[in-house]
Length: 433
Image 1 (cartoon, rainbow, N blue to C red):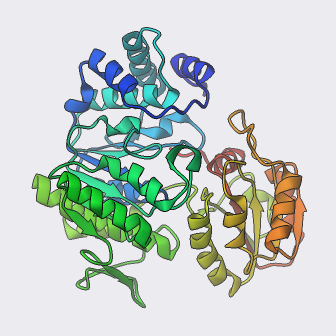
Image 2: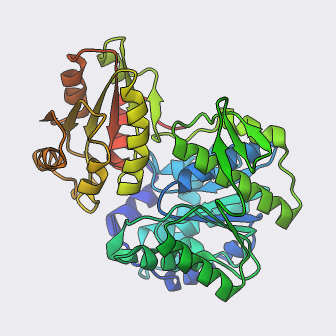
């Protein structure tokens, strides 16, 4: 399926431009009739890691409660339409073309980045389809992110902060936290995940300055894993979530804390049964995502399984490393890795060394990934990190064929980049819907 013509025009004009500001998007939105002021109650989510997973848990719970939910996330894995979900369904090409053309007309040829244009299109689309709640994820940062035009969300959310996008957000956790804290608004509760002390100090100081009540993980809401699942706030038993890893339990707990704040702000109740149902139904592709069938899976012998994860920074690497350690106790663990050169490859790889038998470095395919690390250079970085067996291949299929000759049982994880994760889903024939 081809992309809408307006999307192609935006991509050709501003393929990867990042220019953090609110002036341009506010101008366009004013010309569109200020759709950001006519939305259903908004839950605004910023952070470095876990934003999309928290949004996925929220959507699953809200929809299980029978609510109509709009969602805006980024980036997409295969098709742009994944970024905009309208009351339960991805936006279709015709409607996407319609709102993008409206943005083009309103912009009248003035400077506008791709993310600003598509954010304006999403907000416009959200006003044309009825909903009960909008889940709005920042693209980059918070203070000057195009999504921060929302005048007053129902709840602000900040997930764990780590070093990423340093060229735009700052070189320290404190600087990055300052940018993320820019979404906090007076009187709007801020549900904040546990943070490194350097980041927590900045977030709480900003919250005090603007008058935003803080609900901090580990202090105001808690969770702990149990033999049969996990416990939220010491009194609510939950089953293990469908998404894999202890970090996903933390993300689920933050989502429940957000729902509590949302109920208090809006009066919209999300029953416990809906929250529990969300643990079973939550879906967020390419986050420790098992591929059960498909073209790539079919290249493997039956005693191997294939997984995909889009994590690409040291915090994500540490979360993956904990899962891979558990996997290594049950069988061999191999990884296929491709990364973008703007990421901290060494920091990501170092967290994965212990449990991994073989790492195969691959290039990241696609027109948007000219900054991908060549396979031979990534292989050198992996050797420097201490991986015992490092190889390289020129495609995912070739890497899988190489690893398929190894001794099983085992798991193979494709990781290091959301672009690579998207390429894997496309090559496997399992595109998100």
